[in-house]
Image (cartoon, rainbow, N blue to C red; front, side, top):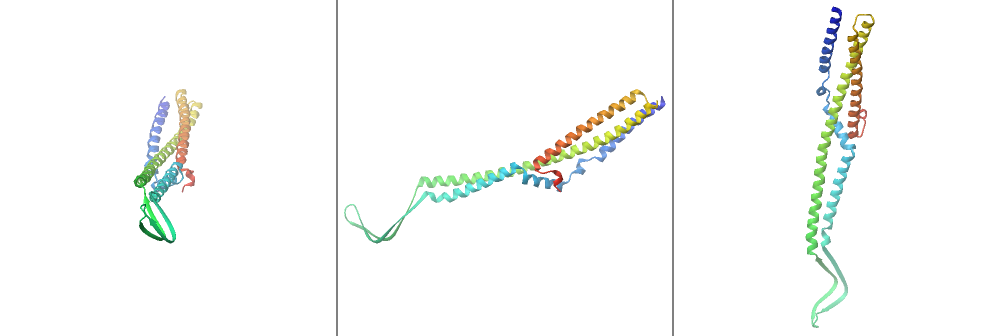
Length: 231
């Protein structure tokens, strides 16, 4: 009876010490590498399709603005007439009015069209500013998203390590309990508990592995590259 009680106490103390030690060893804050995080952000800005779309939209808006400025002169019209010899222009009453020779140039403009071009250019410029602001805003958003996915990845990695250590420990305790039970030094109750704990630990490890792989894939999706390829 005393031996059974001592085994129970040993199991309890072992799990408490193991948990404290494990959590003391695993720290996400210590695992964060900000230089590496900056590389991840730069990679996402280079490869993520939505970022490229924002860049193209800025280029289109810039081209539209340049084109609008070039059409400013469309409101004006220019014409010329070449007279190779002296020409007399007579008024309707038959009197002499003017004398022309050589090239004759005339300039005219459409006031309504001129005012319309002004607003067209202004709108094109404002569209360019909007496109640039949207690009800046999206860059900030993607920086935040990369950080969130990176921190989640580190979290799941830490949890996986804890679950793996717990699994190894649970296996050790199970094997020890099984050996003692087969030798008649352990109760069926404690042996069953050790077996159940071992099974639960294995399931927790499988769940942690799945969560880790999902977190890694989610991070790589926004990066457009495998983590192993980013040094």
